[in-house]
Length: 199
Image (cartoon, rainbow, N blue to C red):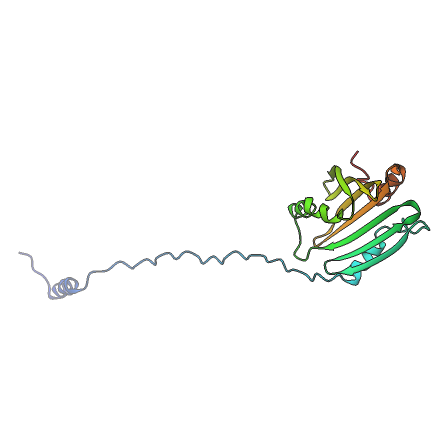
């Protein structure tokens, strides 16, 4: 039988009585907190035209209609500035609108805006009208071409719509008697050289 020394015996007894070593608990991984994606809200602007809108509308055509044939007037309303030129000596009308879309617009919004309902309103005073062509550029310029009858006279009508800013669209309608193709081409080229007609 082996002899244990008292010191060894004490050490054995102490180690036998010591609590068993417990493993150190590992922390449970906590998934990182991901902040919710920020939803970018479009801040809508006022529908009231600014002086800059008025100035832009009045200057848009440059001096094109500053001739004795044309008489200009304009109005400022909610969501728009409208400029009208009457050419009584040549039986013509030119009409520009600077439209405000206060919360912005997409191409689909414009497709809907320039739909049949809109044309019925625009041509409400004509005896009849017919859309004969439509075209557009990649830069957001549209042209709608119409034939219309007013008081028994036939007219060619070109109606352009141009994306101007993120909240602004400029439209320009020119109404000339049938047979004024050269004049229409001149106006179209002066105002919208990249889309003077849908030919």
